[in-house]
Image (cartoon, rainbow, N blue to C red):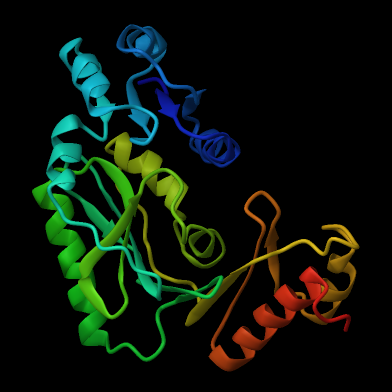
Length: 273
């Protein structure tokens, strides 16, 4: 059995991370980021075992035409049509992020829920009971089985009412960074495993809390200089310049929040020590 090739139609940011995860698995990844016609997408797929597309880039009508040609393409048109029937509720406040993956053999893996608030993510959400977190995950499990999801996505739901869906993100979820620094299996590796119907990896968090924060560049400085202070102050901080984020994991929530907020303020030039 040879290693497969997967075709991904997604934005430029996702290319490096999926290429890296594919390389570690020995899986070839072929990228496209433009809007394809059906014939172009069928031609693109010829040396791939399957295609995975960002629905914002490829319309359902194109996906249906490609499916009729015999190409395996995910998410399927059936999955997208079922999701289109779910009402989405615009929310300006806090959200919960639920990352979840499902393979063709109906193996489902869900990460702990994440609170998305004020340029921060906190996993798991503080102040939320285990019973409520379990209900949120069970709702996600039920949904992915009903729509026959193959692959993975992020559900963003209203933190005040988790039954209100705000948005669905596919190849580049909003709360992906915490899974890269604080989960046994990160979202991008799991996405590939789910697409290829490989056994899914553990989604357990490696620490009690994982916090990430968005970084804003100090216009009077650059993105490199802040490392000197921030890395010396706390060697546990993790940085990702591709998504402009900082993260940390541990057990003391208050201390972790203090460190991330300090890093954001120092990085942006709001404070200088």
